[in-house]
Amino acid sequence: MKVDKYLDTLIVGAGFAGMYILHKQMSEGFNVEIYEQADDVGGTWYWNKYPGARCDIESMDYSYSFSEDLQQEWNWKEKYGTQPELLKYARFVCEKFNLRKNINFNTKITSAKFSKEKQKWIITADNQNIIECEHLILATGNLSTPNTPNIEGINNFKGNVYHTGAWPKQMPQFKSRKVGIIGTGSSAVQSIPVISDTAEALLVFQRTPNFSLPARHRDLPVDKREEYKKNYKKYRQLAKNSSFGIAKYQPPAQSTFDVSDEERNVIYEKAWQEGGQAMLFAFTDLLTNEKANVTAAEFVRNKIRKIVTNKETAEKLCPSNHPIGTKRLCLDSNYYETYNKTNVSLIDISNHPIEKITEKGLITNNIEYFFDDLVFATGFDAMTGAVNAIEILNDKDISLKSIWANGPKTYLGIMVSDFPNLFMITGPQSPGVKSQMILSIEQHVDFIHNLIVYKKGNNYNRVNANSKNQDQWVNHNNEVANATLYPLAHSWYNGDNIVGKSKGFMPYVGGVANYKKICDEKIQNNYEGFEFT
Ligand SMILES: Cc1cc2nc3c(=O)[nH]c(=O)nc-3n(C[C@H](O)[C@H](O)[C@H](O)COP(=O)(O)OP(=O)(O)OC[C@H]3O[C@@H](n4cnc5c(N)ncnc54)[C@H](O)[C@@H]3O)c2cc1C
Image 1 (cartoon, rainbow, N blue to C red):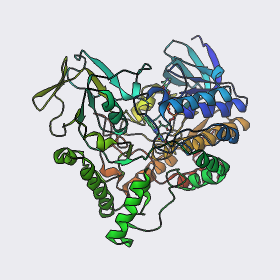
Image 2 (image 1 turned 135 degrees about the horizontal axis):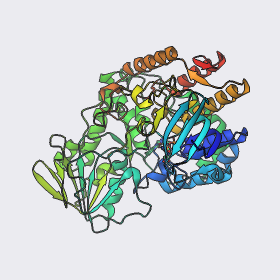
Image 3 (image 1 turned 120 degrees about the vertical axis):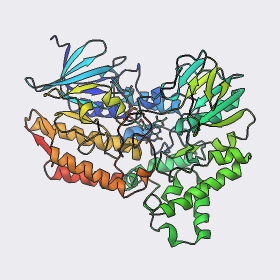
């Protein structure tokens, strides 16, 4: 076997996770490179170019904190950065830290095999290059494998087909066109109001309504930005001490029924007017007590009923099959208001799934709907999709995918037992997707980087997660989730959005502060649960 390249560390993916660990490893003097299937950096913000795409955690929070220089130099223009602004930021980071020369673009990693003889990973890329490396780091993203449902006749459609998670570089023009959109999750909630501004007609096919709260988006006032910058140290620390990694959402002190109905409504109304996810942080028990949750859910349903003038449409938009906050909560700019436009129709497919896609549209409930362009806003094979897409074999030729057949098992969301020197950034069973992700990425990168430095410094060949510690972690993860309302929802957190995918709650919902404390304790106990040989 001819090896084309030898590396200390190979990183897969050039999103925020890949770029930061590349920077850390380069600074340490490692021979390290990224392989990225796209032709640029940015990950999520490279692929999700759909109209209206932006982050829904405020940019002053949703940004790197590792470099004081960087956070002082960069000026966010809007409260929630738009996709172009976020992509520009990713490129800026790439140039500032001189990362581009160590990134192989347009190259997909297809397989990885741990060689027993060499004690190294042998990696294959789609250009047939073979790379040998000591450490393999998967920065492949939790929401990076777009999911297109398997609907009969999907290839029959003669118009343009788009997926929000793999949007073309050249923005399609919807002016004077009839557009059909399937899905009503976060990406749909962001894109529907924008597409409806120019489309002649927009037909929204909804299986499950999701809760959406107003973002109250606006330009970021310069004085607010400068105040934040001046006090960044304090805000970043507040974020680290919180449950979800957002400075302004500190753990609440009172429970839902500590206050009267009137007082509670005033609190919800204030949160609604403020915008963002404030409502979910109003009381201690909103995500653990069903009765408490109903008070918030009903508040939002009543808002929908007030905003949407057509009573039937309003009821269809009211989520009723899951507690609020247990699926990814959407933030919107005029989402519900959009259904008052005469060019927008909502088609409820909850009881009548799409039968087939035709040349000119689709059929549901024996009715054919016609449109020129079809948009899939159908989300991702989340959390495990990108990892499972790579054939990863350990030294006994056992694939990671087979080990995860009944759901992912990890130690701290960082390693998998029997897959030595393989690391994941924000893997399943870590807080990743249930947090401000850049904060979680930074915490994981620091942990993994220091672990590798420790391993090298002590002349160990390999580090492996102990299987007992892994089992304990998986059980702990499940116990924490089962003490909440999260498992009650059919969501991508559970794998429910993918036909045939194993079901089980994947993210760690014990909060970022608790999780970091646990990780720090493992380090203090000489990397408890990690075996070095
Ligand atoms: C529309 C949208 C909005 C979001 N908004 C927020 C938000 O407001 N706040 C928040 O905290 N999080 C948000 N997220 C989550 C977001 O994914 C993370 O915040 C963050 O960008 C993830 O960075 P990453 O580097 O881990 O993964 P990604 O950005 O997904 O990058 C992974 C990269 O790996 C590459 N890759 C994968 N497999 C391979 C392979 N086999 N070979 C080569 N390359 C590969 C992909 O092409 C991709 O570029 C959002 C996600 C989406 C989809």
